[in-house]
Image 1: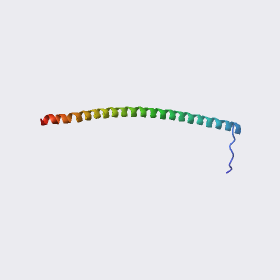
Image 2: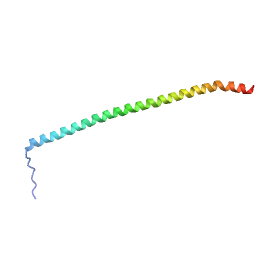
Image 3: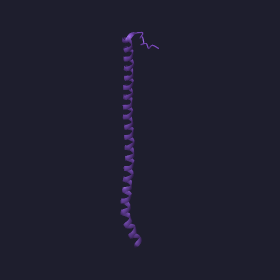
Image 4: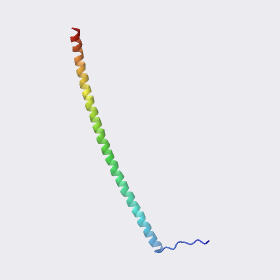
Length: 86
């Protein structure tokens, strides 16, 4: 069996042109995908920061409330004890 080389209809110039068009198209698609991934990543980071800020804000409010309640209890406890003993 004899192997024959492919005979290109448009010659090597046409083949290289088609190959360049395909490679260029793939590079455009990959670049667009990278831009979308970067944009999505930035959106995810912004959403995470917003959720984290809300969580920390709620925790700070709760801790401030607990601190005030403990201060009030420390102030009231000796007075109640003194009142119950007398």
